[in-house]
Image (cartoon, rainbow, N blue to C red; front, side, top):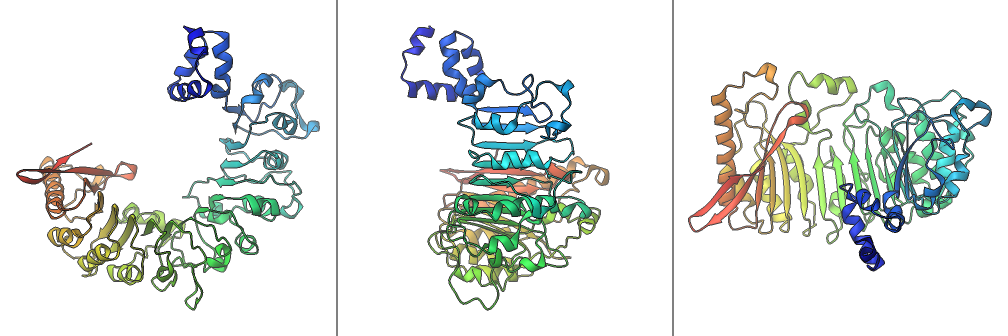
Length: 495
């Protein structure tokens, strides 16, 4: 059988190997004969993981596999690259820079799971200066280190990276929010011209961004910026840092509302020029500023996705015993009202928008807002709305909301959080989970979906999702599939 497989065209073999790889079936196939084993090696070992504590001849990736490695992940506690500090009992040391240089296909490196220990300066320098590096992902804070040089003393020549990502837990204690060493590393990388000319993706916490450095030069290829965390006051409005990125297509700003920066502003109120990002396709702004001129300047034919919402979502900290978490972090609940959202969306002229996500507290104008959405964005295919009741206000009027959205003929997916007064408490310790209450709420969700489905029956709507708030990460989006038949429109609960 193996000799028949060998006759296949190389392109066909590659496709077969790609299909077999995710479920580990390729490994079994590779054991059938030597020839197939050799042809499978580039697929089996294109991504490898190795312990950062074991960069030795005995424990590192075997040399005969180096020609196949495209992505490498280092995990575990790092050892210093200084030969004088190496423990000979660990084995025969490998010079990491030399090893990486002998991996001709290696272009992506990840550092993760360091057991809360910092990454040594020499280790970071070796990785970030590897000439073939194009995609870097640090899934941790680089932290402090006893032998770390001062930020201004970093000397390594950074590789012309196209993607620089760093993931640090968003809900960090206040004394851990500032990351001076992470900021110093990225600042050193960002100051180098080869990086400025090559970088296409930047995905890092806001506390790590060298805002002044970014704003001081042009970034001709940068297409995507995604950040989360607290924005410093001196960086606002954010055009100061991001204004020289003409190729930007995605701008995602997950920033909480703080005592220093209440709302996220991209442009100053007196801005008179065009939008600095004419190719923008995705814009995510948390706690948007209704007075920001950017919403009048959004690319009318290019923008495809717009999210104007809270971060984190308001329902995560809406209940009284959840709010101390926000207070402890120093974050505030400054959700827009329906009127504030109307002020923003009424200035948007992006009729080709395909996906919209908004979050607001109703103030008597929520139905007006739904009507505005339908008129301003007639080509929406996905709409997500988090609507919260004002204190002592009644539930939403489903019939009016359905009628307001009925002009959206291309709408396929509708997601709603409607903050029903009768919703069961999400935490079991405060809720007896009376079976009758649960049944009543389930019936309310189905009746809501059915009312909306009948009003949207003339559109392309396929599924209506209604959110049921539960504890922590157990919140559920209940899918109601729209069923059209001879007897009219109905809904079926999906999974």
